[in-house]
Image 1 (cartoon, rainbow, N blue to C red):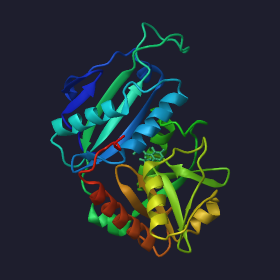
Image 2 (tube, protein in one colour):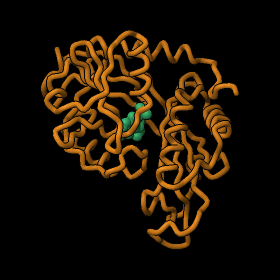
Image 3 (spheres, rainbow, N blue to C red):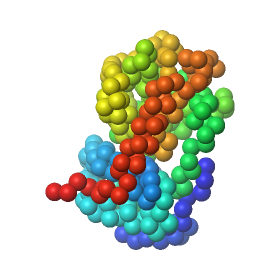
Image 4 (cartoon, rainbow, N blue to C red):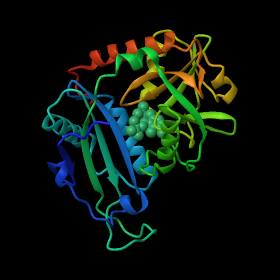
Length: 294
Ligand code: PDD
C-alpha cells in the first residue's frame, strides 16, 4: 500500500499530513463514531462526486449528524486538495467524526463540532497481470453489525475478514450470511450467470456501492440484463463470473473462489466489457463540472 500524499485537510486548514493531530477524546477514536468516503480521482477530477456526497450525507443522517459542508463547498475543497497534492490520478479519503468531548460519554448529549479530515493517496494504474489473471477470494461468515448500509469507520470485522483472506493468499473476503451472498470486506460483489448480471438487493446488510451502481447503469445501457435479487451461496459458487466493485479499482474479476476456478478460471466477457465501459465513462466525464449546473 503506497504512502499517503503529503497535504491533508483537517478542521478548516490544509497542512502537512505529518503534522495533523486530533484529540484522543475524539469520538471517532473512542467509539468509531464517524463515517467516511473514498473517492477516486482521474486526471485531477474526483469521479462520481455527487454519488459519493449523496452517500456521505445519507451516512451522516443515519448517525444523527448533518453534513458539515454544502456540496459546492465539498467540491471546492476536494478540488483544492487534489491540486495541492499535484493533480493527476489519486484517491481521496474523507472522514467526518462527531468530534471531541471533555470526557468519554456514550450518550450523544450535546452537539459537538465535528472533526473533518481529508487526505489523498496515490492510485497506481491496475497491474495488467492482475487485470488479465483476475484475483482470488475466499468466503467467510459475515460477522459485522446490523447497519452495514452506513459507511462507518467501525470496520474491525471487515479488517479481520481481509486479514484472513490475506493469510489464505486471497485478495478479498466475500461475506456470506444465512446461505446468501452479502458483499466483500471492502467491495460490492456482482455475479454473472448465462450472460446476465445479478446483484444482491440493498438493505441494512450491505453498503450501497457507487461502483456497483455505475456498473449496473452501464450494463443496462450496453444491453446486458441486470437482475437485483438475493444470491444463494450455491449460485455464487456456480457463477460464470464473479465481479468485485470498489471505488479505488473499479471492476475486478474474481477467478478463484476458495481455491476453485470461477468459470474457466479467467476474467470473463462481462468483467472485460465493464472495464472498457468504465474507462470510456471516465474519458467522457473528463473536464465536465463536478456538480450539475442549476
Ligand atoms: N470500500 N462494500 C464495502 C463494505 C466497502 O467497504 C466498499 C468500498 C464497497 C464499494 O463501494 P464503492 O464502490 O462506492 O467504493 C462495498 C472502500 C473502497 C474502502 O473502504 O476503502
